[in-house]
Length: 135
Image (cartoon, rainbow, N blue to C red; front, top):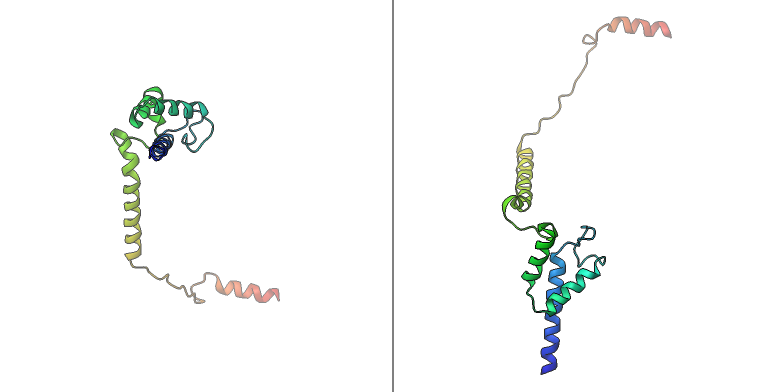
């Protein structure tokens, strides 16, 4: 029974560590999360140490936000100007759908076919005469 509890506790620790690593950008290059990149073993070790000390997931994330600022968060906090990150794609998508619907419902006009008669072409007689002289 104790072994089951120990395995459950170890898996819970790994889940917390994985969630934290997925929530934080890697400050070495800012190109991906700590989970995605293996460029930051010091940070991974520090996260493991914090978990072993009994700190909660939010306390660990807050520590890194205090250290690096909100830039460290993989998902921006939805407050202030950051709300635009969440709302802008929805607005742009709805606008695009609206424009598409309007375009598809507007009547499509067929292009008028243009038929030239010999009287419509300026200098037609002169052109014909010059062509005959070339033969």
